[in-house]
Image 1: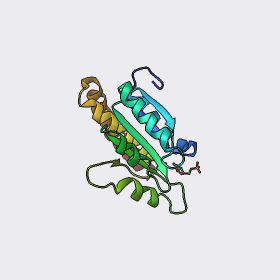
Image 2 (image 1 turned 135 degrees about the vertical axis):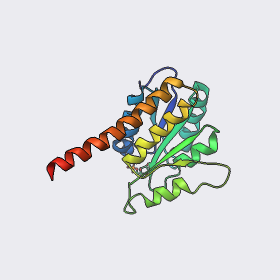
Image 3 (image 1 turned 120 degrees about the vertical axis):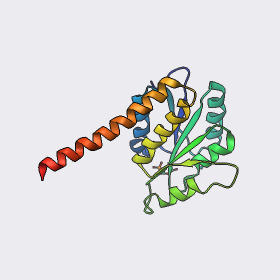
Image 4 (image 1 turned 90 degrees about the vertical axis):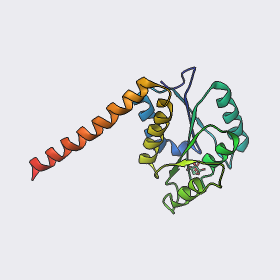
Length: 169
Ligand code: RP5
């Protein structure tokens, strides 16, 4: 449901090199049928573009923002400084510090300007989308039902994997 007119989630990434990881967020949003838009904007290389995109997102009625970035990952925090919409940050492993730099840069926000910081990498990108869906589901009963089904399927998959593993032993 990308590029739909009324979009619920804006997914920003600091570089196109973050896409292989952030793709997991888009796939997850697709799975829930949640509309989103995607853009590349860098807190350091194109700070004015970040500000412009956030202003436009607010005008378009976007409800949740997801930001993925690596290295000194200030994108989520800078976005949070420009809006009171909820911001979810995904630290990306893009340096010799293997994402630890991005975790701290995304996570350690000063009091008053929160960023909901996810795990590093694809798991974090996926969880960012699930958390965004959970936020939207607060005022959307069909979406809340989809989340319940999603959880049930995860539990069933674990049981299935356990069965398959036992068969092999
Ligand atoms: C960050 O720097 C981006 O989010 C990316 O993770 C990292 C490297 O960017 P590129 O040099 O690959 O464009 O701002």
